[in-house]
Amino acid sequence: MTVLPNGRPSTPPASPVSDVDVVVVGAGISGLAVADGLIRAGRSVRVFEAGPSLGGRIRSVEVPGGHADLGPTWFWPGEQRVARLVDEFGLPVHDQWTTGDALVAADGEVRRIDRPVMPPSYRFTNGAISLVDGLAGRLPSGTVTVDCPVTRVERATAHLTVHTSGGVWTAGAVIIAVPPSLAMDSGMIDPDHLEPSVAEAASSIPVWMGGVTKAVAIYPEPFWRQLGLSGTAFGPGQPFGEVHDMSGPNGTPAVLFGFAQAPLADPAEAFVGQLTALFGPKAAEPAQVLAVDWGRQPFTAPTRLGHTNRYDLYGSPHLTTPSWAGRLHWTSTETATTAPGHIEGALAAAERTLGALLAG
Ligand SMILES: Cc1cc2nc3c(=O)[nH]c(=O)nc-3n(C[C@H](O)[C@H](O)[C@H](O)COP(=O)(O)OP(=O)(O)OC[C@H]3O[C@@H](n4cnc5c(N)ncnc54)[C@H](O)[C@@H]3O)c2cc1C
Image (cartoon, rainbow, N blue to C red; front, side, top):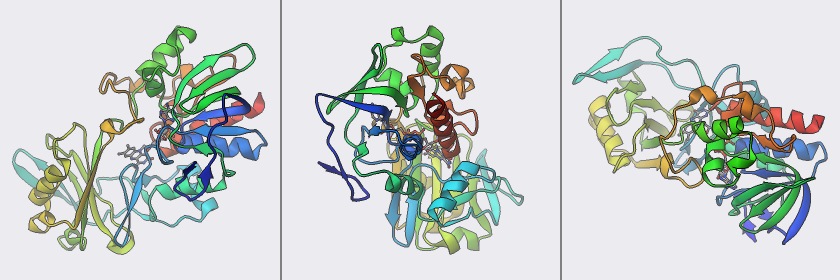
């Protein structure tokens, strides 16, 4: 039996065949949200998660004085679904720090920009994972099985058959709460059993931030603020094209993070080197540096990285409409018509799928 991070045991899959109303593939925020809605509407649901923990691209770690996000950092004004969950779970949030000048490093020079360069945004004080924990904590014990990849979903006459590493299930409907191109790349669904336009869209849609490296440097204090700097920096042509302040409320913990679009041999070293060039010698002495190359994380993006830049397929009607006579639903953030790519998009996609299933 696998114990989930929230301490609740996860029931091993029954074998060889069981029946359930809905199987959800993936326990990222979209999968957990749709499972939560279905269970509250009285449906029987099983969620199978390939990895050892919940949250997918949402990942936070505890650091001295608070939390650091290794996946998503922000949510934005107007993202009502995130705001609603924040309220429901009573999660502490704080404003993104924007006071001070931004920096632009180009042509061998570092320039200061003394006007706001980023739209206002909010941060989850206890890490974005607090949203995942809130949803997971509401699911009945045994709903989610971790370390249990779904390997195949097949269409039968009156149900779908779901093959997992731990057994075979039949379900009235299956929710692919996994980026469609990852599901297709893994061989989970036979493209010849989909409408050609659906197979094409599902295979070609990129995974949002699926190939990005995020590096996080934790400092004893937010020294850049004392220099009149916001912590935001842009470095076209540099390993980390963007850098931002990711500190907790009142600057504790004091954190800078950056995104690199291309894989790096030693992202931590590259990040600290770049920060030192931008913010001066204090940046050379972080207490801790963490880095995640999301392109190399299992169960995140197709192995054929960079094979597609078809961002026009986000919210494609081929994927917002269920396949297989309403039994197969595409539900990752990439399928959202509102805020695709964001946590808000994942919640919007879950809401759309929930509506379709409860109407059916
Ligand atoms: C570095 C980074 C920074 C980001 N910054 C922001 C931000 O600031 N704000 C914002 O709103 N969004 C941001 N995002 C995007 C945000 O993380 C995503 O929109 C959201 O987490 C997607 O959730 P999801 O449920 O759609 O997909 P995922 O989180 O990808 O969940 C899919 C789940 O399916 C599982 N899975 C995969 N294959 C299988 C299988 N075969 N069987 C079973 N399970 C499987 C995976 O392990 C995963 O748990 C960022 C993402 C990254 C990586």
